[in-house]
Amino acid sequence: MLVQLHPGNDTTAREPLAERAEQIVEDAVGRFADQITRVEIYMSDGNADKGGANDKRCAMEARLAGHQPITVTHHGATVREALAGAAAKLERTLEHTLGKLGDRRAS
Image 1: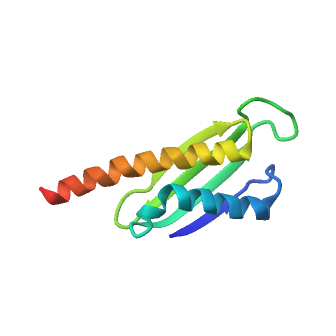
Image 2: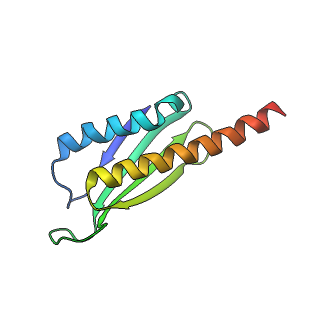
């Protein structure tokens, strides 16, 4: 499973962010790694240089072998909060989607 980070022009600390993002994704959806070809992470800061609540946005797109991509989005006050929230949503969505696919194959 390949994890690609697209930090956006307004997101700082790119290298540590890439490592942290990869670890968060691995922890959340690593058990599905044999079914996921790639996870793309798109980070943005809604207010850029201004402060504000929940202005960090993380969108994750999981590419499943032979299926349509699955996309989730989460907003948070910090980059870490946005990443963790999106990873948790992606995990729940994959559990649901892959569970349905498994049920369909078992029939």
